[in-house]
Amino acid sequence: MALNIKPLADRVLIEPAPAETKTASGIIIPDNAKEKPQKGTVVAAGKGTKDEPITVKIGDTVLYGKYAGTELKLEGKDYLMMRESDILAII
Image 1 (spheres, rainbow, N blue to C red):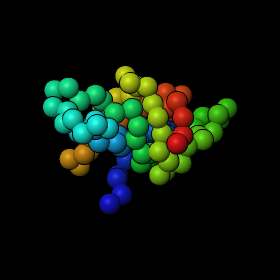
Image 2 (cartoon, rainbow, N blue to C red; image 1 turned 90 degrees about the vertical axis):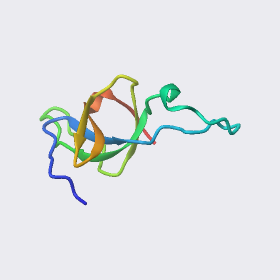
Image 3 (tube, rainbow, N blue to C red; image 1 turned 30 degrees about the vertical axis):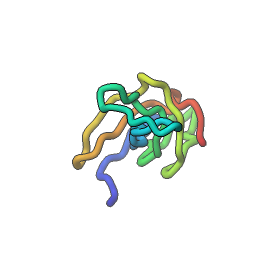
């Protein structure tokens, strides 16, 4: 299903990856102790500014800062809207 949203300029819409529910050793993490994910998938991207075109594409998996972006809820799902400069790396 395509979203009906188009970010402007250098903004990117990201769908965060789900939070981990188990540790590597198999310990179940309770809801109040789960950390906010710092990885997600690009769902939509603007065209960039005239000086700097956008470098991420739709479908890229990216890493971003812990407190980066603005949380949005669209069509029942959680998303983050942030500037491309807040993205740390493409995986």
